[in-house]
Length: 423
Image (tube, rainbow, N blue to C red; front, side, top):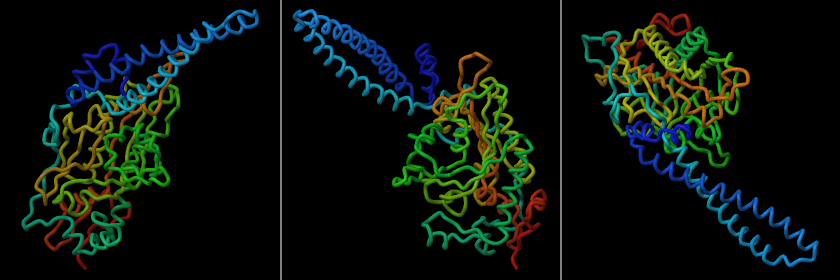
């Protein structure tokens, strides 16, 4: 949620910024509603005060045996004014609230123009894509042949784009999770296993509603939703709290299953593990003072890059285009791993600076100093390890002629084998 005081004080700057996201007209609509509310509220309050005064005068007149008909007529007129004013005020408040929730965050000036992932600006590449002296195969073909991935059984059980992972691939998943959590914990993030079922307010507070409702699994009977990322639950840890400045930064590392409808087009994206409806993820989350959020964003990116480097995966970093940010983010980096079967880099992790957008919606504030008025914190999130896509990238980049694949040495200490190969 944007700062309404900022919009009132500098509407043209806000409109110019949100024009990059196609939301400039919504600012005018919001200001019109806000103006009507600010005009209507004193009218109702003045009418209520006048009615109170007149009611007292009516009582005094009756006690004195005087005629109070004129005063009573005026009170009746005021009652109608108050009731109609309150009704309009409720309508304006509802419209204003819905529009405020729908407005996206103000983008960072450094976020490049454009509306799709093709408009992202490459910052750097790290590592060289592998070269093979044989025709490389995709992860699903390899995993199916080795008996490690069973999409057909997953489809029979749950529908398309669900999978069974088996055997040594399970050990690989657990090793990846343990590796990522330990690395991120050493960087000061407290591990958390959060709830994955949340109320609507949590998704509204983090900005996933109303924008992404069609991507979210809903359980109407219980008025709960399955989260697509533990970012939602981690952000809610300090909802409606006022934190001491000395407690910041607060950093967390959440591990959870994630659920997304993922309405991608059929094709490579929906083959295998790249775009499934259920996956596991290790997520980083930070609450920081506003002045620290830019540095914190770079810090989260550095951790993501360290993980990819330790896993010996070739990748590139891109600055995501403004039209592809998602409503909460002011700026986002993606780390894209090389996928041999697609002969291109694809998103493996991302990290976003959501500035005060989520904090305002959630009521997460801090007191800069003793006696000062509370202010919203800044929140940031970053993927430490999207397990399914990481497994995909490891299989494809480290495959061998015999249909097996090796695994990076950093994972061996966490219980996964050196190599997975045909028996």
